[in-house]
Amino acid sequence: NAGVMQNPRHLVRRRGQEARLRCSPMKGHSHVYWYRQLPEEGLKFMVYLQKENIIDESGMPKERFSAEFPKEGPSILRIQQVVRGDSAAYFCASSRGPPRNEQYFGPGTRLTVT
Amino acid sequence: GQNIDQPTEMTATEGAIVQINCTYQTSGFNGLFWYQQHAGEAPTFLSYNVLDGLEEKGRFSSFLSRSKGYSYLLLKELQMKDSASYLCAVRATAGANNLFFGTGTRLTVIP
Image (cartoon, rainbow over all chains, first blue to last red; front, side, top):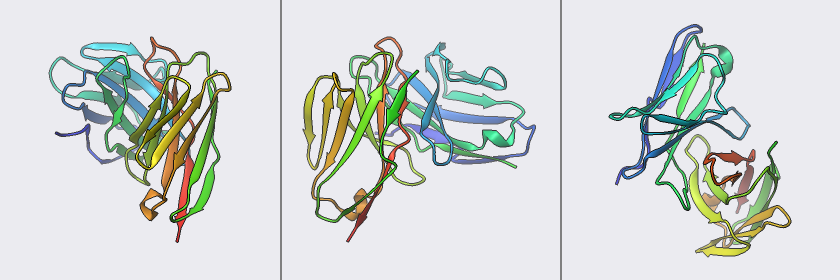
């Protein structure tokens, strides 16, 4: 009965490199959400996806960030040309869908940009 | 815009009861969630309220008043392991499934 899985748990990148964060939702869940948490701040919504579709990307920065949830395999959050300000914890959550649609979170990926 | 307010920090004694308040102003409302987050770990789901009233689950209860834009999380018989951040989150509309989170309340339980 695995929960939401994320990898890697820790990722170090130099400025200008690319970061790829992976998320496998809980079994039976087809809705995936990505959030970012900066130190001492609340979780901020980035993007909501269902299989092969981006439903809401209103919280995603317009440049350098992209997300996908392919038919097969995990959801991926991709950050190109990382900058120091991208250093944060990135959490993925999944849900079964309406009506309650409660979200269950993965352990997060801590990205450090040096 | 969306605004969710919680106290930044609280301290309570082991065995006691503590109430963590949350007020919100959002463009719509379709449910309020409470999560617990230990330092360096993932948020874990505690409770969900969509109608006014009290939801009880063991040592944890959550209350909602939609007309006042107000919720609280009540923790009874506090244990040391309850030291964590407690996050209030609102789902603003039925169509959008993302949650708006407050910055969280850091609770410290002392002996």
